[in-house]
Length: 157
Image 1 (cartoon, helix red, strand yellow):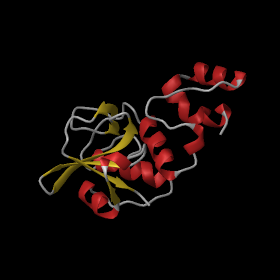
Image 2 (cartoon, helix red, strand yellow):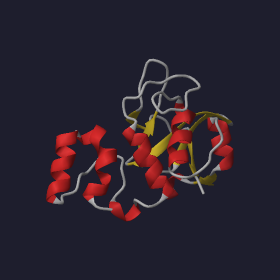
Image 3 (cartoon, rainbow, N blue to C red):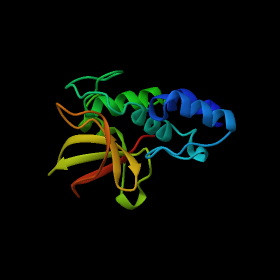
Image 4 (cartoon, rainbow, N blue to C red):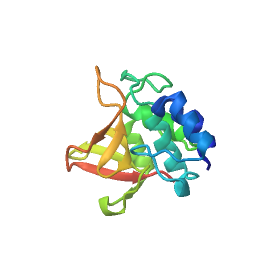
């Protein structure tokens, strides 16, 4: 994928002038939590890019986008745009995903937060111990460090 092809998804993160300048000179743009070109074609990487493009979108319980999201609404929306279907809730998404260990996690995998056996939150793994997620009422979609060890990982197939 060339820098020019990335311009539409990068406009909100890099600013129109910056993205167009990069495209014009054939450079590349590094965006935290967004995978490199070699992985760009995978649905997981595409879902990660879509979630990152929603940075700053407000949390709203039950919302599935495109302007407001709850946690599972963001993952549902991102994967749907990437061509994959997920259940509506975090627990449903956990049950539908292929469970993997932390040592096998990759950018674009789902991160499920749990208390005991109950899944209560989900985000998209961005690499380096961080996730894109829609945290809670009063907050916005953001990149954040995973704050607990009580997480499970799932891969969408």
